[in-house]
Image 1 (cartoon, rainbow, N blue to C red):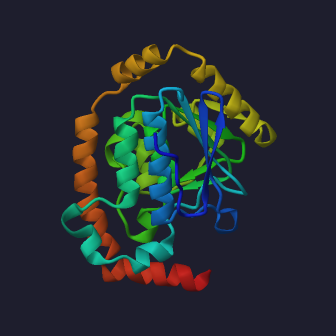
Image 2 (image 1 turned 180 degrees about the vertical axis):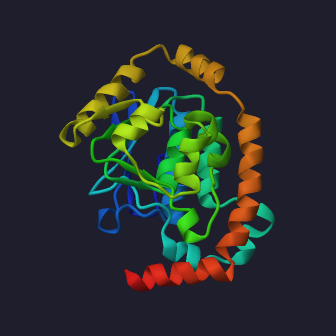
Length: 257
């Protein structure tokens, strides 16, 4: 079995028995996700998938935020050919890996979960949120459209009105609202988050692994429809990302920072 080799310098992994912890570690940039960070998380997911002795994965983050979403500089510097005809980005490659994964994934969220920081949670099996967690998709304010299948999943999960608070109005959901709507499964104090997440991870890791896999397969519905929706979203997302309107918003955002 090949050793896990990460490349970005901003993602680290830790094994706790049968639990694999994958931590975003770019705290000075609020864990804004670069292409290489997505690839590192995908490498960790592949490693987890291929290890029979690992039966649960925990995704968490260092610093003040879970993630500020995609690095805007990466958007601005992207090559149009890299997204032509709906070609998948490293972010969507990661999402597809999670859709196909038969093992459980937990996410522990604190601070801001922006953009894909919120939509990635739709492909995790259990989300535990600290009281400080805030969920904000950001797409509409950047001149973009939803991604990661969120335009299909969020209305089904939260109801159309609540989904449109995130996707059309650009509202931010508090941890309390997210828990009541069903976006997260558990909530706790910030100082408890990591311990509670590791405890939940250990609880899952102790379950019979084949039963976990079969149960996840049985409870996962509509994967083909989600994949098809991601294709549609990706075409429009790329069109918007390279539009004059959106690139002007990106420029303003980076200059303001």
